[in-house]
Length: 214
Length: 214
Image (cartoon, rainbow over all chains, first blue to last red; front, top):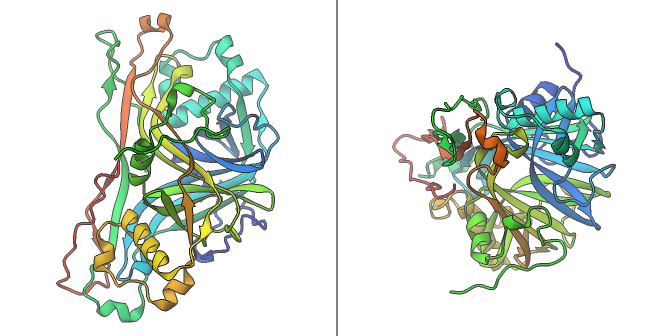
């Protein structure tokens, strides 16, 4: 299915190193779908605040928990950034050292989700982003829990994607130096699951596959 | 050496889940020293913006590149957040699913570093945070590169640390459910270094040890 390209507004246009800008909406989806946490930027009493929090994507909507430290996020403008660090770029000069990364930035005003059906679906999206398969395994939210949860929906309208991949770009004359250059790849992995000491005997672990989260 | 405790100002006090607050300055240092990137929050034209960028700590000063997307960061208030994701907490109810993490948040107004000696030392701090040992291997910044780099210094004065570790905290009655519960640990690893195709033969890779970056 073809998707519309990403917006290019005054603030999503990549100014610094514009060659790193990506305009394919598919790349936005891939970066968001591969992530476990975002960094949510809000303004509180005139100051910026950056809060790490979970999220989930459903189509062109990003769902977020609304109780993440800001007094009220409703109707306030936010910036959500998701970053994957893929490697350290070791150049022949310190000046050209860099990082390989994929990063998505979304601007907008989230709305509070009040419709019970959308709220439940949004919470499912959040849960499945963090722990795929668990929605069908674990007890789902009851009425009290649903009421205690503030869910926000942010449209994926104004967004930008920036990536850097590949080897260092050194000055021509530095290639003569006796300095190793290349990439030190970085990756996120999961280790063997650690059962809760209170877990009753005989309950098997069902794989919660986040291996595509790279 | 004993260090002063972290500040508790109106905005660094942890409101949501205050039991996750840490007030030991050593924990702030540990979280910062273990990180490779931060998320820098600034206000641009009245909107929040969250930019992933490198940083380095020297004592109670955090150094940041100043050319990170914001038109000018000088004298503007910023929020720097560094987050380590340590695991996914799989509870018996979706409501109690969570993440294990360590997170530091620093507020302040960075100053532009203009003194050449501090600038060089600050860039060394930045380089060594990203790639320990490389400052002594790679060619150091020349005058032109130094002039082209804006370096910011942010004092570690107003900061907060928040962590969650350990197993899920489920409702008492949910312990009877046949749902596996525990932790799926997450960790960042490096793979074998990939040499630049342009690398001259016979130049050995010198370990750039970031294994303590967990």
